[in-house]
Image (cartoon, rainbow, N blue to C red; front, top):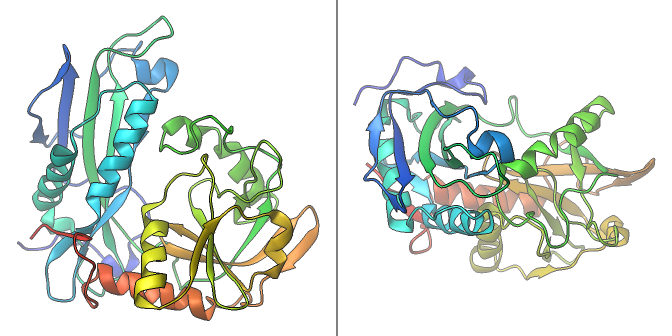
Length: 341
């Protein structure tokens, strides 16, 4: 299929409407068959559950053109499982895992012309989401829902190359100990918007959130998990019941251990030990790993030895290996790559 006339090299990280999206509706206790549609609009009641009580969850993933010309996506089964956990926590009906993956495959295939070519630095971002669609005025779950998948081509998250970030220790709490921090609920992101904009106004790129109970342990940022490297080259990531289980982070831990032969550790990480790490990165779908060069704790600067000019050596190896797997340059573990075309 002929590609769309898009300047792939200068594509930003924003929404570009594509030709098709998948839509399925839940009513009377069952999902309909769903279909691909050209209609990018959503029509719902002014009293819809999503508008009144924020009953919505979502996922984020990408499709790539590999070195050998295939269109693939990365571990969509884990996105399906994470959305299932989100739905159960929010009292929403689960969209079956097999149907979730098939919807991803069908939507990407229908928008093949928008999948950026290999080597362009751009990818096709995929956004599955679900929301309560019928009228709900009492505080209770909706009885009707809509599941949708849309795609949009996006450029590299970092224009002009990766530069280490400066982040601050945040005074706001991201998630309660027994709250919704472990699921990908829209409400989590709404409550983080003030904190991230406040960080930007103060000259920081991101927030480091601590655990709400003791404010002594590192959790995550508003949209990415932390990954640290010790002086003896051990990869460490925080463990908490209120951290979103990042698919990128979980994949990087496998890469560290199985591909690079590094020791990995998932454990509680205390703020007062951050100064002892030599590298720090933020893990997520958008950038894979965003290196951190400096962490500011209420005026006290923690400068990572990896510096403010480039990724640390171990972080770079992790990044290169995982992106090599995603782009088909390296052999992937079984089940990691879903071939679409």
